[in-house]
Image (tube, rainbow, N blue to C red; front, side, top):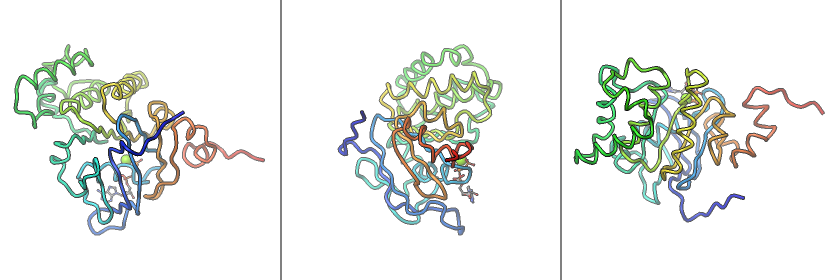
Length: 249
Ligand SMILES: Nc1ncnc2c1ncn2[C@@H]1O[C@H](COP(=O)(O)OP(=O)(O)OP(=O)(O)O)[C@@H](O)[C@H]1O
Ligand SMILES: [Mg+2]
């Protein structure tokens, strides 16, 4: 069974409300907690606010109300680079590689907060041993990689800062099944590197398979949460979010 102690909460959102510019509240008094060294998946229909939640934690969007705490310290409203320095990294849904730079240069950019060149080289070596294909293509321009390889480079670049919390938005979007499998294998492996994963995934079965705990978001609110295997088996989830027909009594 799961042992969820309350002592090692890494990230806590409390009554968090957020939205864009002068628009309506997208997240509405949302509260949830994330413990260190676990992996989490957020599921929910299109427009539920999944990406918005990650953007608030990454500092791209400022909370309107409520708090975001990391190790008990309030971090809501800090800038993305300040949050990155605290070990919170965000791999967004839209492509953010530098297509005209080489694979190696993209990785180096990922470590822009690290001034010790030796450390940067060591980390590049670690990323290459995790993704041998990136080593092979080190000199190639990022824009010439396949979709799956670009997603690996995105994950590799995020790993360059040795993050504590890695938030990954829809990593399998647009990938061929085999490439998606490889990406999920990598995500599964992040836990053993001591990285807490917060994943948003459109492929619900896959997302739940690589996470310990799931949050179900709808209309900016937390509808359910629980161990991923239980959420997967929950008929309410099947009906509401996975397009399965409700069972007829
Ligand atoms: N930059 C933006 N400006 C204004 N409104 C936005 C912006 N981005 C998202 N929204 C709105 O916020 C709501 C939640 O969007 P969000 O992208 O967080 O949903 P999501 O759960 O990630 O959906 P999807 O599964 O489609 O990625 C939607 O109504 C969307 O139209
Ligand atoms: Mg989204």
